[in-house]
Every structure is written in C-alpha cells, then in structure tokens.
Image (tube, helix red, strand yellow):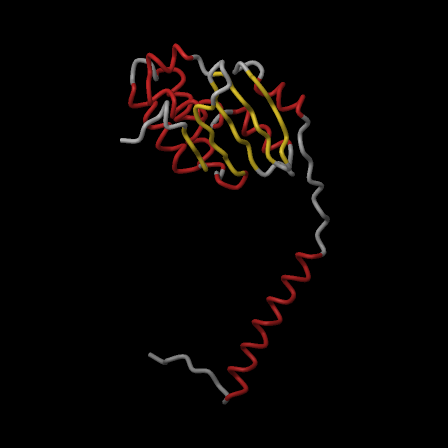
Length: 183
C-alpha cells in the first residue's frame, strides 16, 4: 500500500493556501453579482386580513420590519385555564399558516410578534418569532404541534404544554407574572 505524498517543498503548502484563497475570493465575487432581492413588508391591512378569520384582533402594527398582532384573550379562558392558557396564548396564533404565509410573501419581514391581552388592555403574554428561526421541517413540526393543541388541547392538556415548550424553545417570549406565575 502506498501512502500519498505531497511533492514539493514550502511552495506546495503555499500554493494550496493560494488556491483556497482564490476559491474563496471567487465565491465572494460570484455571490456579489447576484440580483438583489427586493425586500417587501406587509401593510397593517394585509396583516389584519391574514389573522382576521382566526383571532379577535385588538391591534395590528408594523414596527420597523416586525409585524405585531395583538389578540384579545378572554378573562374567562384565563380563569378556567390559569397559567397554562396564559402561557399558550401567543403560540396558538404564532405557529400558524397565517404567520408562515406572511414570512413567505413578504421577504423584508424579519419577525412576527403576537401579544395577548385581556379586555382591559393588560398584556398577558407576548412572543416574537424571527424569520429564520424555523426551517421548512421545523415549520411543519410547528404547525402539527399547534394544530393538535388547537383541536384537542382542551381534552388533552399535554398538547398545550407541548406547544408552550416548543414556543419557548423557538421564540423570545415574556409573560405577565399576574397571569403566568413560574413554578
């Protein structure tokens, strides 16, 4: 069995480095020659239309390149479901076809924030999902977890817990201590 050898002296190592540097430089130049992608943002009306059929919206705004959707959460739901419903609220809407569609259709949208509030205006919770947080595979998983929680969560509380854990792993979130005490 012969062992492959490099022929040459110092010049061999130097030429390999030079070749690598050339490849990297070419890659950068080739990447810079691509057509720029036009970054688009949705209007408040377009975001409102996306969520209008699935949520009772209190407010919709575009803050920079982040869409903010404020959803009313019923006080009765929080009384019955307690901390669990307070924590799951934002994720029910965030991990949805509506959010995925906004990311797909508006290339300049960097994130979607869902805020849940009770009728008096007090914030219960909020979560920000960044555009690049989920791959296609993770989006499918997110939609599955969220769909099961919406469909069967009242009978199987563990589905709501699964959605909370998934949401906390993939978003920046904050809960109002009054409604969602940490254990």
